[in-house]
Amino acid sequence: MTDHILQTKALKKTFKNVQAVKGLDLNVEKGDIYGFLGPNGAGKTTTIKMMLDLTQPDSGDILINGRNTRETGVLARKGIGYLPERAQFYRNLTAHQTMEFFAELKDAPKEECDELLAKVGMEKWRDEKLGTFSKGMVQLVGVAQALLGSPQILILDEPTSGLDPRWARALKDIMLEMNGKGTTVFFSSHLLSEVQEICKRVAILNKGQLVIEDTVSRVSEGLTGKPKLIIRVSGDAASAVKALIDAGFSDTQVHGQVISVNVDANQKSQVMKILALANADVEDFKTEESSLEDAFIKYIGEDSTPGGDRDEA
Image 1 (cartoon, one colour):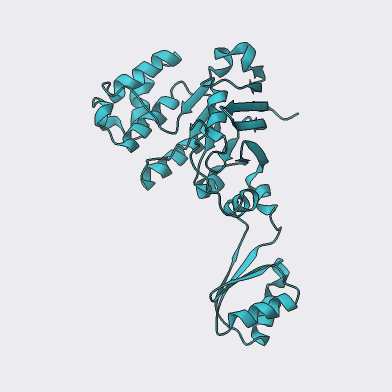
Image 2: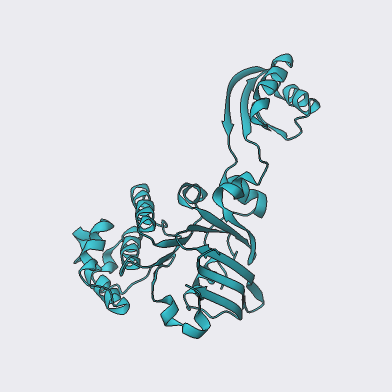
């Protein structure tokens, strides 16, 4: 039997006349790095807030380590580290005072405060007030406080928001390091590339409903099962595309001088032969495997873009 550390069952939440979450079932396995994806208003942040008891579900259950949070409350959530999408702290406290404040709340060792500030590169500003910090600096302090007490589960809502590329990369390394030590990482993100890079499993949410939940590779492979051959030609690209379609390659598209066609690995040479017979001069070509971005667009639609929620708006 799969060892689930975090589950939602038939979870529902309505704000005014908008049903933000509609009977959501999630299954996060112990040791996962789990990506939580969806377009604006999909219900991601609302779901996370219900997991943390920051808002109450209308119905349904949340289980952490098999404990129903309706019955065990704080006890079930004791081992969670949380970073909200927009981390906000007392502006008149220093970074170190903020860390000590959260260490007391979590009953975590205060010796960790300086260690974790150093881990996120904020040791130089330990005695500076957060009111003077940039958004990215506040976010890094938020990461540090989420790591206090070596949590069993890290729940991160858009964790790289406001971070420059260097610290976004460092945060991904921290997530991988924590996961290597046994922490389950659950995070939402609008950067599909970073989800595909580090996640083991992923869920895609749309309009409050679960579209798919599986490993990243299976979600991506489930699109066509075939890689995509990208070919740049000179000359009459339209005639080349017609020749490919006439030869049975129906899943062929053209944008200017670039032709894309889904093929099996053993069909590449056949495609190139057809193009040669069609007098298409091939300037360049490459193969692309199906990506998580392709899957997202397939499941959600071209007009939706992943990002922060507006569930309560």
